[in-house]
Image (cartoon, rainbow, N blue to C red):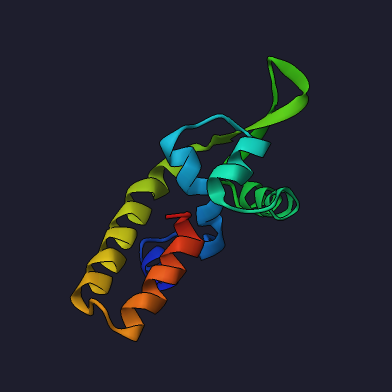
Length: 120
């Protein structure tokens, strides 16, 4: 459902797994990669791979942390900012769909999936 909405809006390179990186950055841009892993609910190893994928797709860029040259921070690109309202609308619709089937196995499946996608 998310992929279809993203593609319909012209964001063909966005994968649902990108939510673990993008959602925390939508809330606070410029997070250190370790903070990003924690907020996204993923391991640092998974985060490293995923950050590379999201960066290659053009949605974030990494920069050295000005406070600690050993660390890096992730920043949203203009393309990510264009994508943000699309993602928010898609997640809201999924939330509504989950509410509509409340208490069913389908609602539980959607809730688990939302949790994995957005860390909610």
